[in-house]
Structure formats: structure tokens, C-alpha cells
Amino acid sequence: MQHKLMTAAAVVAELRPGMTIGIGGWGSRRKPMSLVRAICRSDLADLTVVSYGGPDVGLLLAAAKVRKLVYGFVSLDSIPLEPHFRSARQAGTVEVAEYDEGMLQWGLYAASCRLPFLPTRAGLGSDVPRLNPALRTVRSPYEDGEELLAMPAVHLDVALVHANRADGFGNAQFLGPDPYFDDLFCTAADRAYLSCEKVVHTSDLTAAAPVQMLRIQRWMVTGVVEAPRGAHFTSCEPDYGRDEAFQREYASAATDPAAWAGFRAEYLDQEEAGYQAAIAARQAGPGCTP
Amino acid sequence: MHAVTIPATRAEVCVVACAEAWRGDGEILASPIGLIPAIGARLARATFEPSLLLTDGEALLGQGTWAIDAKPDVVEGWLPYRAIFDLIYNGKRHVMMSPSQIDVYGNVNISAIGDFGRPKAALLGVRGAPGNTVNHPVSYWVPRHTPRAFVAQVDTVCGIGYDRAAAAGESAARYHELRRVVSNLGVLDFAGQNRKMRLASVHPGVCVDQVRSATGFDLEVPSDVPVTRAPTAAELELIRSVIDPAGRREAEVGAAGGS
Image (cartoon, rainbow over all chains, first blue to last red; front, side, top):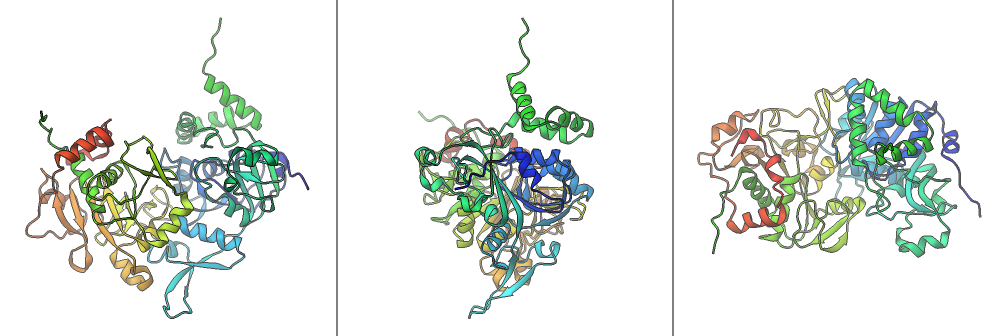
């Protein structure tokens, strides 16, 4: 059986400008942030990004990687409004497809099932069809004759997700309270790249937690990247919670161009190891000089 | 033996008014968004609506009555987001959301203020509001009752009101039901003409004209407007000692209402 271990740089090398990239997690929770940071350092552009959005969307917008955003919301959870998302929307610099959260799930599920659409009540009567004029309704062929919204498949070129544990083949486990929709992102995509806190032997996966938490199976996954603290500063329960202090620093810097340039220089304009070292130094606080 | 109960604050009146939204709901998921609705939902279950289901705010269903920011002692189920979506489609849920704008028919906006293409203020996105409002009962909590919140027309329709539901047809309307709107000034329902919003009660110390002038549309006001019921001593004890001992509720209610 083939090992799929690779580096974040190798994942980015597989991506092309203009691709549609789905990002797992939810808001500011278990986002594949190390892969997102790697994309921000690359010369990729014109991406369509599909996400239950958090700082993944914010960072990619700030790095001018996004042509179009497909989402149900963008939020930092403990800070309700994402500042980069706000400024991009208010400047009108990003094309958007805003859907009901459940419609987005349906779109990913339809793509996963290789169906053109799935019917739903969600969105009927709201402004979602007005703002997404390509949306169509479909009439039930049965006696009820109901007219429902036909949510089109949201097909992804690539999915990026972050898990707590994985083996080298792409079997992956969530250990926190919610799998979110990571498996759907993977199956809606031609190729899925999974980062994880730790790569372990396959037998260790079920030794540590019930088999039901192995939500992602190797047939869904193209490549595996070991990325300790790779979801930072979003939460990755139970390995670590959200770094609220750092998220506040991020959100505060994001509202001011000069502050953002400083934030970028300090944390983002370097390889992942440098980012993690800067975070560790920040958490240790100012050193004691003898 | 019995200490004299300190009179209820405006925030505590609002908590009880929110709790009342779930009265009679039985064995469904109460989904409060925001602090006052969260205290209210726990209060409702601890008192008059014991069969309600409640989450810990993440993915666990909990039994008992636990404090804001604490975790339930007894876990009775697992409810990750995808299971919540299933539950929404099944209809066994009553959510209380907090809109930025709401109009006379109960259309609400949580997405964008101004033109959607280039908003003056980008908010969260439509989130689950479109699906919620066509699948199960929905109520709203508005902590600051102002003409900027209660508007003639919302800029982006996220959750749909009675006029939109009727116009969109039977599939949109069959499970659509808006129960009540609780603000820092009073309680409103949709028992007005053509299912328009109507003033159902004013909180103690608030007069009808105050609500009228804080509302950006012509509000239907019955000839006799009752006062929102005061919390009982037992309810105040639960709110103050068990559910919100730190008193966080006071900061969430608009100062304009006073108390």
C-alpha cells in the first residue's frame, strides 16, 4: 500500500491558479491553517474558495489569493465578524456566492454523490436566489408537486482539511466534539490533502479512540501532511483550544494596513517552522535577562 | 427566613420573555443564539418546559441546569453540526436568533447592511437563517430596540417573514412560523393584520409611545397593551444563583431601555 506522506510545499505545488479549493473545519475551528499559510506564501491567485469560513478565508483574502468566495458565513466565533472578510466585502473586491449553511452542505453532498443537484426547502423566499441568479427550482414529480430549490453540486478541484490523527495512508481521525463537514469536502473534491497533528501507525488509531471517529478513509485522501499545531490559531480540540489572545492580535492588526504589514512580517512571511517558533516565543512572553 | 427578593432588572424581564417563547414546545431542541436567549432557554427547561433539549453550545446535548460558560453534568446525546441540520429538516427545533434588521413581516437580515454587492457593513452571512425559517419555529431577540433594527425594509432577506413565505408558495410556507420577537422594550408577535408584527406587551417601566418611536415602521398596537409578566421569585433565584451567577446578562441589554 502506498504511503501518501508529503510536505505542505508539495501540496501547494499541486495547486494551480484558478482552482476551486474547499477548506474544512468550521469558523475558527480545526482549520488547515498551515496549508493556508503555505498558499499565502505562494504565487497562486484567482482561487475560488469554498468554506464555512473563518480566518482561513481572512488570510487568503488578505494575501489577495481569492477571486471568488463560496460560503454560508465567515466568522471568528469568539469575535463574530472576520475583519479581512469585512473589508473585502465592503470594498467589493471579491466575487461571492453566499448560501444558507445547509445549502452549502447539500452542494458538497451532491458533488460527493455525483448528482447535479439536491432539492431543499432552505433558501426559498429569501434573497439567496436573488443574489445567486443561477439557482433554479425543481418540482417534485410525485403527488405533492412541491416546488423546491435545486442546490447545484459544489464540485471542488481540491479539498484541504486538518485532523487530529492520521496514518500515512490517509485514514484520519477527529478527536474533538465535531467532525464538521471535512469528509464531505474530501469526497466533493478530485483530490484531498489532509494535514494532521500527528501521523501514527494505523493500529494506534483505534487503540486511542473508537473506530467511529475515523471519519476520513484513505480512498478520500490524496496526500497527508504531518503538521503539529497546524490548525493554530483556530481550535483543534482536544489537542489544543483556540489561541484567543493571538486571534485578538490577528483581528486587531487586520483593521489597520500598517499593523497588518507588521503582523505579516512577524508571523506570516516565513516558513511554517518560523511561524510556530514565533508563536512559541510569543506565548513564552518576554525572556528574563539575568 | 425568606430574604426580600430584589426587584427584577430589565435584563431579567427579557430573560423570562425569551423563556416564554419555548412554552408548550415539548420535546424539541431549543436553540438560543446569544446570552439572554441562552439563559431564557435554560430557565424554560428548569421550570415550565422540562422536556426541551439543550446543547452545551458545541456538539453535546446535556441534561440538568448548568451555568452560562459551564458544561452540563450529564450528557444525553451527540449533536454535531450535520446532525443539527438533519434535525432542522425534521422540524424538531425552535431557534431564537438575533437579527441586525427586522421588518414588519419578520424578514430579518444578518448578512449585509446596504447594497449586497458592496455593503456599508458586511455582517456574518445568511448562516442558517433561510433554512431555519422555512423548516421550524423561529423567534428573535433584539437587545437594542431602535429604528435601525426595526426597519421598513431589510437590506438582505436572510430569514423570511410572512409576506415572503406566502409569496414563495406552499413549500416555503408550510413549516414557516415566527413565534415572537423579544426586545429590550417589549414583546412583539405576528398576530397583527395580514400577519404583521404587533405589540404584544411592554416591559415594566416602558410606555407604548417609547416602543412606537423606537420602531422604524408603523407598528400595530392593540387598544390595551399588557405589561410583560415579571419573573417569579423562583425564576429570579434560578437566574441569579444557578444560570447566570456572574450577572453577565446585564451587559447584553440595550441601555436605551434603561431599568
